Length: 457
Image 1 (cartoon, rainbow, N blue to C red):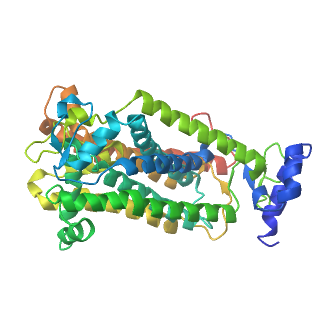
Image 2: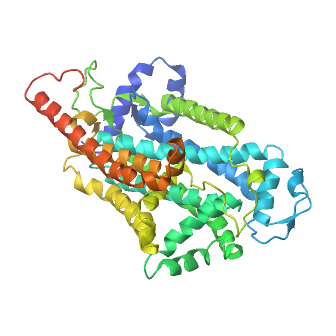
Image 3: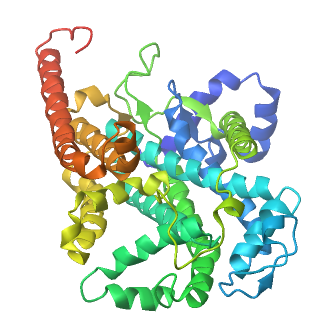
């Protein structure tokens, strides 16, 4: 049976439940839903985890819409040649950096400006979080294997581009807090032997904030034009591959169906139109509503309080956003006495190893035969142990990045907790990996021997 006929069979099997739907029949007569692309079957999603990819997609749509609004009002100017005349009395009549003054104007003088700025902020958080959770869902269920390795690689690249995009946008307000955090990123890049300084000069036009008048326009171009175009292109490729290939089904979803549970020539589910399209609309509206709620009630980054960049002062407790906190923690784990070599090890080598493992894993855990069913993570001891250890490692590194707050909580110093945090960061992920692997291997042996796993196994 050819690949072209399989989606048709799948769509016809899913359309039976809608044979009495006048809407479906009307559309089917005109669009050939049962056999065409619009009739592609979407399997049952009993846990809702399949929708994480759609949340990421719709978050990007909101990012593009709000980013267009903000980009039209933003000025990538680092020199103090803008006189602020808005309603923030603290800065009225002062000459401010153009970037800071424009963001100040967007936030406090443009109607709904703060709302759209916060929509953009929270949509970025949702975008990165949804991609990460989506990839963890793919990883634990093992559906990154044949024939879906290309989409895993594309998804990994999308996650990296989203992180870089977050870094680029972080510097644009040019307030003192974001200036200091962005400067750390430039310092890490400059520690790369032989090419670090050349990279910052070639890509950004110099170091930040020393050469901010040259760097900021480039960061604006990358953030508003180049990287969104790259992300949109990869999303398009990701969706094209998704539509070309069959969807994966959750293992055990056919227990009450007549179709054999291991028959991957047919997909049980609902057609793209109108059923999945209606569900996608609900997901979009729900995502937009949650982001809107967060934007309206939690307006963070009060730049009027922080003030414009000041080369002679550093705000207290400077730290990056949550999605870079683990990198910040890796930097703090390295002894400060190592200087630039330590920053290179913690800020470049460590994260690069984790990123390389993410890309190479699909070539390590591979399958010669196509895998079309999402497996139970409890039946995959080694991958599940590796995934749990990775999550715990990222959490531990993030806690190290927040060591100042931990020290304040326990009324001690960061130096006093440095060694315990180092031991825990290494020991806890390894211990969790061993515990998970041993328990799941024990469960799998019992299952293969015909015994029934006990509750809690």
